Length: 201
Image (tube, rainbow, N blue to C red):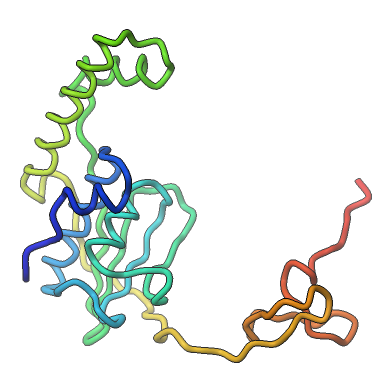
């Protein structure tokens, strides 16, 4: 496996440094290691994530699995769980992220609450930034088995992304992918235009 994109690259892509991003970085590292894969180029890997927090940006950047390529699936479960599949042989791993133990950083936890509530002094904000950076660095350098749990699993691999014809919505005049179009009053319409029933409640 080639070296991963640097942490600084991922932070630049995402916009800021945080524990959520670091979690996704370690998850992606574990996925590529377990699947013995390089960064995805053309849907060799499929990723399915069960949350929409900062971690998924790192997963997309590091693994190369993206919504645009059709090999990134999102489930709104609110769980730090990530599944990856290698298409060549359907090998799949389910990875559960283990965040930093807040008991190891009691002062950081207290400072975070003050900073996010807007009640921290300038000195406390500076101390929070320093402690947070130290905690992130520690997390990024922990052995993988301390920050993720990995288990083999089964996962139905979706077909590769397809290119579909477009039709023009009879109501708004905008193009819509043919399989996403709906029939309304005998005409092809897009989903927003098909769903205009207003409740009387």
